[in-house]
Image 1 (cartoon, one colour):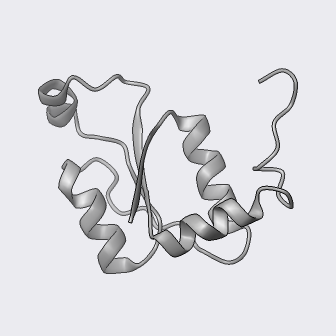
Image 2 (cartoon, one colour):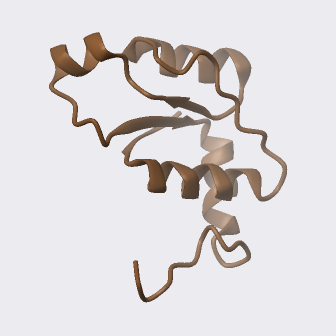
Length: 95
């Protein structure tokens, strides 16, 4: 399992790369507890995005710009291998 603490743009890139060769991002009710982001990814075997609940944000002092993306290691490998082939893997000079 690979866990990322990211902003929305980074979440988009990671999920875009993981989806490039067939993985389908799965988003359950996205405002849940921290532990559920790992549980859902393991149970469904699909990438997960957690928008972090208001309670968790207050308790954990999370920035409003942070999300959690969870991928299986297999999907992480797919994302990493897709970087040269997908527009999600390249960056422009303005970023």
